[in-house]
Image (cartoon, rainbow, N blue to C red; front, side):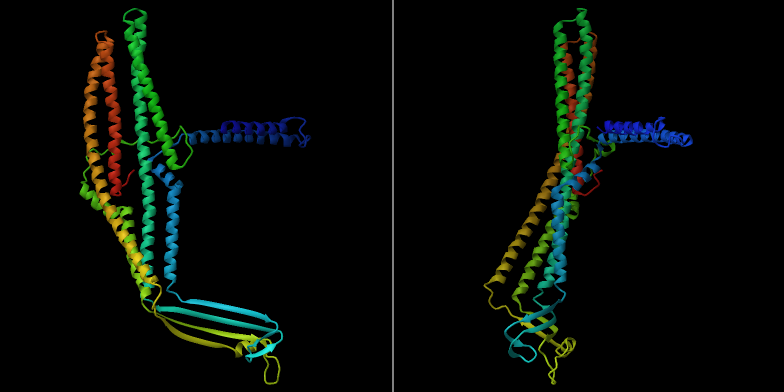
Length: 486
């Protein structure tokens, strides 16, 4: 589509520009020197538009070959993932709550301005006497108060919100870590299926070469027809294996595209992983991995921080059981349209504001006596939340240790399986080489050849799966220790 549009645009522009080269063109027909100059400019325009069109076409083609590294895949998935975004919003909310907990230490200051028009019977604020006429009044007030002591509620509430905000940041990191692991699994699956597809293609090519050879020999009557048909059946099996491998690769590609939340395309390709990343001697032990994970993993930090947050919340709510002390003060003034001086003259607006100016300051103490057990029940609920957070933190650590031990066991088992399969491939390669030689020379049977070939193909397939399985296991252990994964 982009190529067609670019070609269309260039054709339209060049067609319109060619009008300037014609004798009947309406642009200054008598100005031959101008037409000559325009011809030169038009040639340059044509070249520029042609180059621009070629550039657009090449860029569009390059965009279709999406070769992604593991790092790029993870970054795209994290940027597009809705769950990660929702957890980030929760972190922002926790940040606002923390700011509010800090703001609670500041005094509350409020100002009010009131202007009233009264009709009928009312009280004149100038002399506090009853009147029955229209009256205009105004009142200005500025007041403030601050809590001096409330059982350390504000202090412990601030600490609780601070811990919870830090925990929410760890939750955000953990949501990104989960996407990382999911993408890494899908990415490695793509690499595995890609190698399996290539292996299926090679094994089908090998069989096809033998089929072509036997077809010639069959026409010459040099072999039994059953030998050719047996090998054609094997070629059909190899082709089916190739189709299945292609479908598996497409499914893995689709899974990765879904995790990245991008449109599916068959051109999506995973960049190959270098041999240097396959460490066949993983030195860390389960205990050492666990100790590092306890200090590094976001999920552990989040659980501990939430436990501390709930602990401080218990202490904060206990503050409601103690008396609270606060001080306050303010200034005020007012105006009345009926206010008069000793000479029965109306007092001007600004003079009344000055004359009626007043201030106050005071202190108060609130003693909780009986509040329907509300405060005590709030403390009891907070204690339950605290115990639940402690239990979850401990459970998370136990599950982490179990997962590390299981993943380490799977890694070592995968490594042993890989080594065994590697030896098996070497052995079956020699066996197939001998069977292929005998079969080509007409000494071996078709059955022996097919058996030797299937053994080698199966061993190579299993080796590919074991190789990437081991790679994935080591990367999971690297994740526990927060080592670089690429």
